[in-house]
Amino acid sequence: MFRKCITTLVQNAFCSGTSTHIIQEICQRSIHNTAGFVRPPKILITGGLGQLGTECAKLLRTQYGSENVILSDIIKPNQAAVESGPYIFADILDFKGLQKIVVDHRVDWLIHFSALLSAVGEQNVPLAVRVNIEGVHNVIELAKQYKLRIFVPSTIGAFGPDSPRNPTPNVTIQRPRTIYGVSKVHAELIGEYYYHKFGLDFRCLRFPGVISSDPPGGGTTDYAVAIFHEALRTGKYTCYLKPNTRLPMMYIEDCLRALHEFMCAPDDKLKRRVYNVTAMSFTPEELVECLSKYIPNLHVNYKPDNRQLIADSWPQVFDDSEARRDWNWQHKYDLNNLVDFMVKDVQENYINAVNGSDTRATIKI
Image 1 (cartoon, rainbow, N blue to C red):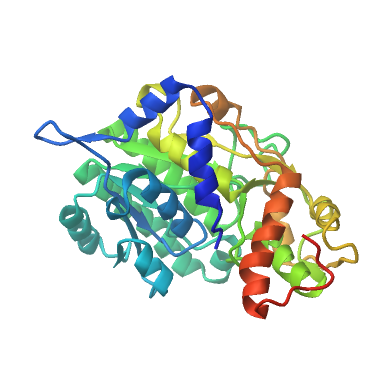
Image 2: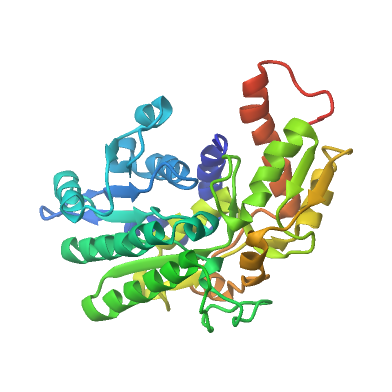
């Protein structure tokens, strides 16, 4: 897990920005109850045991208290997830079950991470339709009924081969060719519809590839995670994309900070309900060049598979100027310091954890 991310993120939140921004954030994240008292929001995170869920819960618990952030999934949690704060079973296809959770726990915000990612979704389209489309219908309707603020992430995969790729603006033709992308466009549009029709406080960010030290989970951009695990263990990696495949990327700390800042942004600052956000764009060969500073004899083979076709239909460079203009989004991590942090985190928390105190002689950190 990305253990150092949250401490750093919280420290940075209070060491940057103006006092006015901090005051606005505190005001936005407070909920007035019927007695007039101010309390922190009660937050439900679905799909909480995926790449983003557990780290998002850690961040929000530092801000609002452990008891106010409920992690949920249909997977049996490990001991660390159980001990870190409230965890419940929640099936996004069970609408009545979701209603009970919202009522019983007095939920105010819903952060909806449940989804099948791009490569996995192509292997099981009917399941992806159920999870990624029917599941979104359920949480959107739930948010409408109970007047929740809801966040649904979108992706670079929401664009397709007809979209401009360098740069890809916030509003342009999309028409993706994966069920993952189709389901995300559907989520964007139905969320905007509910905002205009019913006043639903729907918020959505299109994330690029998100890089963290957690093992890869089936996304097309996950080569940029897998390479650290394989290269630090063996000094070798076989990449399923061509060396010059450029894609937008983002370190997980920037990703979580963007989500939190967006959720706290005053509604009158938001010109849209869906924004592009990003931090950098790079190719596999550029990543390998940076990683070679730590593994001088790193050997990488390139054997493109069906994921290459997906990557070739996605943006190369994301234009997130509207997010930077409207709610002051700013990234922190570029390729060089991303690699620095990833090498240290994977080495300490995965390689050394497996090998005990024995460290690899070829790796100098």
